[in-house]
Amino acid sequence: MVFSGRYSARVERLGGDASEVWAVHERASALLAAGEEVYLLSVGDPDLPTLPSTIDHAIESLREGRTHYAPGAGELHLREEIAGIEERSAHRPCNPDDVIIFPGATNAIYSVMSCLLDAGDEVIVAEPMYIGYRGIFAAIGAKVVPVALDVSNGFRLSLESFSAAITDRTRVVFINTPGNPAGNMIPAEQLQALADLCLKRNIWLVSDEVYSMITFEERHVSLRTAAEQLENVVVIDGLSKSHAMTGWRLGWVVTHQNLVEHLLQFSSSTVFGCCQFVQDAAAYALQNDEDYMAEVRSKYKKRRDFVCDRIASIPRIDCSVPKAGMFVMLDVRGLNTDGMRFAEDLLEEQRVSVLPGEGFGNSTRDYVRLSLAQPLPYLEESMDRIERFVNLRSVDAGDASQVD
Ligand SMILES: Cc1ncc(COP(=O)(O)O)c(C=O)c1O
Image 1 (cartoon, rainbow, N blue to C red):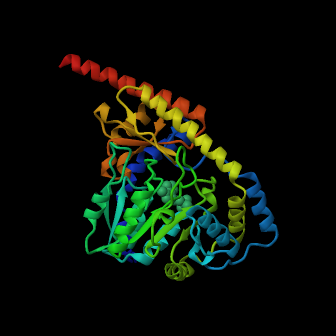
Image 2 (tube, rainbow, N blue to C red):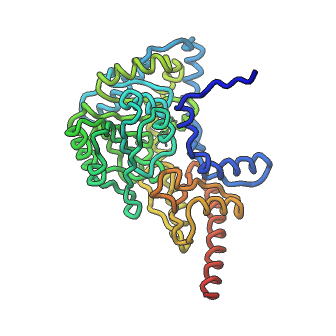
């Protein structure tokens, strides 16, 4: 007998169209595995190591037997640490009960959205948006209403566009500052105005701030710092990017205690607590990160400056200099191609893998994203190859115009 059990509609929705965007990266990984020299600028897993003393702390914690179930909301000492950081940066009280721990920001976002959205509800999302959001909204069955940032103006947000996108079905406005992929930062006055707008319309405002600690010239301003009232405000952060701890899976939500209670109920039946020793290590990392974070920021800034300077020196490609994060969006419009073609051809001809911009939404179809999560010499070789690739195209274009 042939089994013909069906899958849920959720499975169908999750099977969406992201595969095309990752095809270049997957081909690059296959070429690498086959022994070819390929330069991977398509992923955002930091190349930097986790702080060694954080690792030692985790090992000690494991040896001390911190290997059991943890409280559902997270270990109190970690929540106290995060609440303290919040209090110092936002200059307003934050209670450990306003904080709940998750195994990574992805799970935190999924849990928050599961508590705020029903299938069919609308969620307004700033675009370009981090690729991972699509699957979360697809799993829930929420309708994503993208609102494009101004790609030609440093990916600036327009309050009017957000306001115009609100309908009776809007439940959540979702922002990401500093942003992936564009490294844009939403200024305090816009955050405040957006929070005000959402509060008046009874809409939740959720901010993903996982790049909050990787900023360059300006300091990060959190939604919780900028908003006048906090009832409808949710902030998500984590250690993956800032502390190069992607594999440890540690993120958190700071929000109103009513929502924390719902989140606790949700996570009690989906996650059932995060590893004790990982939480111990996370608290240690947050307490001992001053020099480490200064070095992380300085490394990414040097890389950003290098890549952006090189782009500026190459005719027909362009970028707006990111203010934060680990990525640069390369504008390929001047080459009469789109991001997908550029990424495919670049991999074939020069063996550099970048992510096509359409993965982040329509507004960045003519862009590709370059990751800065590689050491400078690696970025140097990658940029040499990108320059060669562009120069060859410029020659082609020159030939074509002569024929015309
Ligand atoms: C904007 C943004 N949010 C969330 C995540 C996921 O973070 P985590 O590893 O904590 O799940 C990423 C990872 O790339 C990201 O770029």
